[in-house]
Length: 222
Length: 222
DNA sequence: TATTTCCTTACGGTTTCCCGTAAGGAAATA
DNA sequence: TATTTCCTTACGGGAAACCGTAAGGAAATA
Image (cartoon, rainbow over all chains, first blue to last red; front, side, top):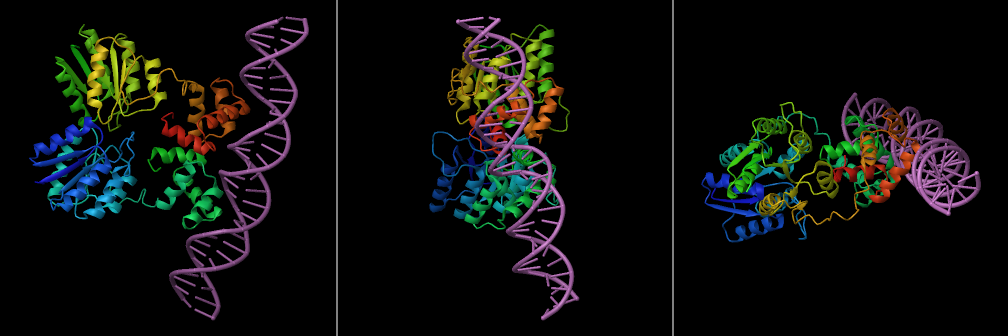
């Protein structure tokens, strides 16, 4: 079994259970942090001291509080950890159950397992840890039914997300166009952006932009 | 201390900690349900058998799964419980931290305490249970800074919510007007609705309707 | 090179949103 | 009753969204 595991989870009510699972699995060194920044520090320090972690178990969403945070979510933490210690194994334990989000965690951030917090997630988590230890790949907790092959949400790419983000921040078409020119994102003509929004509306069966953003929020895209 | 407590919480990773708190407080009878419907059944049964619960601790959001649910969220459960056993004490333990939502729990559903899931919520929960037992009123966990006196969100009423709901479903002004006439909601002139939306935009500092709905979603209003 | 195809962008007409003004009516007050 | 105040609604003009068409250009193909 893993010898040294880091848990990043802000909710104390949950971290208790996660640590309990690791103790049950006889993991000798278990560290727990409530902030992503703190997590990265621990990972860096462990690498420097030549005693790196074997596994990171992290949540995705972290509450903001008085402390100023550099890394604000689990995605950020994983991305930063990948730079410091590319071989670190990673399990995400989160309430999120949108296939788009989860797929991108595997594809873009190279996580090893995803466990959705639910009614039987403790068992699922335990299984995922063991499977990860045995070098299995792309482990999903069993309540997530989507397959990696279905194309349902694959065509929604970061370009679309950028548009949706700006729309949800009150930008009008022309402002989005200007912003894209600033950021060198193409295509950036108002007409192209308009057409892309139109495709999104068809895809999500939205009547208008307001409806579209409401749906995007529900899907956790923005 | 309370003699009989019911916990309604779907996430096993959290319910473990909640039950632990109750055990620490020497509560002799602790029941736990993962579905709201199941919770209501238990409350009804306990009333019928003349052994009612002293306290209900419930989450707000529950995951949907294959089971068809009648009560889909904590609000529903509390509302139903109030009809069956009006004197039941109620603590809500949820991730929600929007003052609008929380205030309405106290004002409309008569809950006794609200504890926000966070980095030190186990202690907060323990305190809230003790305070509730001592008949204190309107107990809030300490990370929630708003006061009941500030008028910040009080003026947002169900009329506004109705507008926001329809907007988020893709209705245009004229359709909202027609819908309101059907439902006998007044005022229902397009102009009045327009003006009300305008007030909401000023209030939430939104540039346009799209922005407004994005904000409303973030606030959990729709 | 010539042709096709696809993508980006521009343009124009219609609808809806946006925002100010004002008319009409109900309730409150004098 | 007369006046004031507030609320609802209508109207109009400009801005932005909405939607179809088409021009221009790049990449792929023949």
